[in-house]
Length: 265
View 1 (cartoon, rainbow, N blue to C red):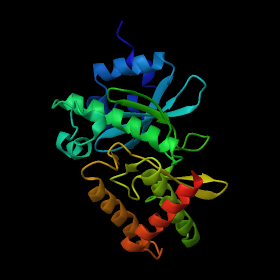
View 2 (cartoon, helix red, strand yellow; view 1 turned 90 degrees about the horizontal axis):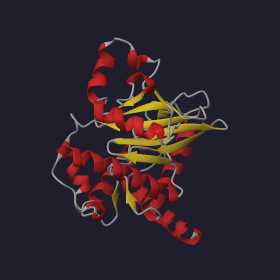
View 3 (cartoon, rainbow, N blue to C red; view 1 turned 135 degrees about the horizontal axis):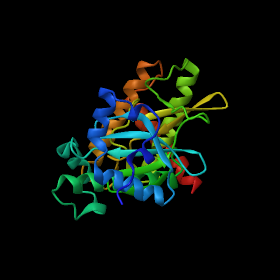
């Protein structure tokens, strides 16, 4: 029996008759995706999808409720509008995906699986990322990053921090990135103020790294190119915010962190 769409997409802006909701319906909620949501719901990963909390070029992230009424995040990758050519440089050369086909569906499904695997590696290396819960075709279920009331955390770009808080976040980002590279053997490849969430813990800002689907293993043919880009992005942003840092001094801090991480093992 075909699943009832409104059993999973409930009560919020998604079912209002607005141009925005119609656009989202058309982009991600086709019959196959609804069937997959039905399957994942039956597996108890979530009870219902509520509303969109982030809309990007490749995917839309929704807040969901599980069967304990706890919040989860469900990321649904677009298939119709996915930019096949933009994905290719990050997945070609990855030994985990040697049998990748040329079909757009195949690319998106493997990209979603890649983000799941990357999150697993990062989590195991004690990098603060959303915990991965399930991956099926173009749907990724993760821990929700937000407060107890269900308000999603803002990105670093959209968070107001004073000088002391900004310097604290910078030091933590350096530590997290070092663990990503030297413990998880991953290069983020798109790290910036847009892909870092700020979660407030005891009134202190804690960075959470997100959007890790494009991350590559350190043996990827373009790993060093992507590493240099991450360095430039982070140094540029924090130097603009008053932190005394440039590309070379950031690399030196990472080298120092490498030695620290070695001693921890």
